[in-house]
Amino acid sequence: MASTYSAIKCPNCSRTAIEDDYYKTGELFICCDRCGYNYSKVIEHETMETINYKEEIIGGHGVFMVIKKSSGRELILLDGELNANQIEEFTKVFLESEVEQENSYLIYFEGGAFTILLGNPPEGFLLPFEESQEKEIKETIYFSV
Ligand SMILES: [Zn+2]
Picture (cartoon, rainbow, N blue to C red):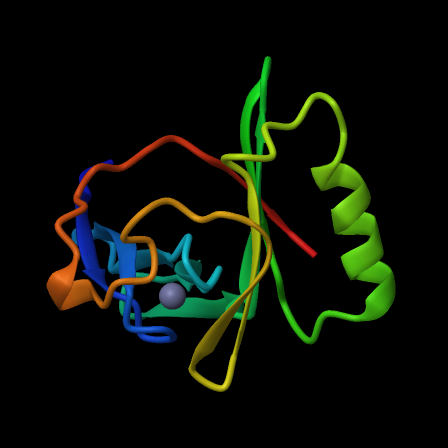
């Protein structure tokens, strides 16, 4: 399937997001690994005359990036307010010996502001899209909570 893959300004946090545009079918995916905003527009029903799309937005309240010594990266998208139990759970995961604490991070996004709760995001991570030079796209597994 033909698509264009590009860095765009995130509609949720104004940082850098990735857009995957299937211009032939009209399907569209946006994923932001800063605030965890995840938008999808996919074909739900198609006839000769009309195409019905289904739109879905998940995440947008921050991310928990877990980088493991052996098995790569996992990104958990935060879908709403963080409660004390979740923070405790994430802290437990963060402190596991498998996890690279120096590269993993938990960031909460609410009301236009980022709060770093655990770890250290990469340099330039929270720069606005216009100032960000980062165009590199890394492969990541996405989860939602
Ligand atoms: Zn974003």
